[in-house]
Length: 372
Image 1: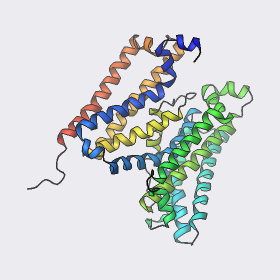
Image 2 (image 1 turned 90 degrees about the vertical axis):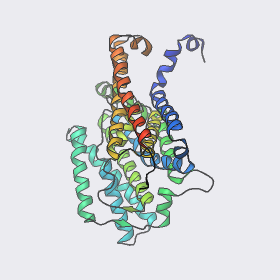
Image 3 (image 1 turned 180 degrees about the vertical axis):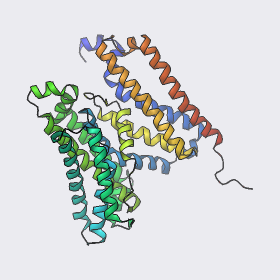
Image 4 (image 1 turned 60 degrees about the vertical axis):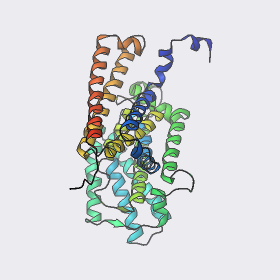
């Protein structure tokens, strides 16, 4: 550590890590609350294993979505890409007798192709990312419904189920290894490659990036291709986990993944990314949903809780970006401003509602099969 860095105030030294500190604080809060409310059920090894398996399903997609959002894009079609890729893979295995070792790479290539189509629609036809990917979400889902014709394809070879829910004896589950490997690859790609630097430059100022010689449209296409391939990987993991797939699978993949990335500190306005934050965001949402299930709170309230976390996170990071532009002298100084005080009150209200929801669930949690 240099002398200049050591002499900086603690708040300034912590500022680059706010993206990861935010979700980690919320994870710690969940652990403390569940340690009081339901320690026996929540901290069981089997339950922790379920949390990791759920988080691993979204890690590859969160990694790719981080690049898309950093470039000021969005991809609402990843759930349909996952479903269509998996349906095609399942048909190749079940109906046409393809080896799983051939069907899985074909599914990944199909996902990349759908990502390429998304990227070309956005860059060549100048369709806004939101509209373009929303429309293609309908197209891909429609193809999946037409191909599957209402069938549920199930009972796949052991290789596929091992990918989705297998475990190395005495070690972590295989899908967790796959998910963490993709996050590590994404971190290296973001921080150690030209693609990562170009991604941040494009998100910060596309016009300036173009003037420096960066092919903005081409790199946007690359990000969507990566997102499509990772969506297909998510569909493969889901198929292996359930040992079944149907055309209506993965309906909320897009919202869950986007929420995890945004909660992790990647800015919806582009130019700011945190792969570690995306990893923490995926883990946070999986832990929160699992906690709500453990407290026996209805599924609809789980959606409310997820929305509260997303809104509070987006509001916080939007305020932080505005503070950066205004140059108010650090985030601690910014909290003392009128806008900062409003942000604190708003965040406290939302987090208070979430805590109240968890508390009500904890009070109402009882014997799921009461006698009499």
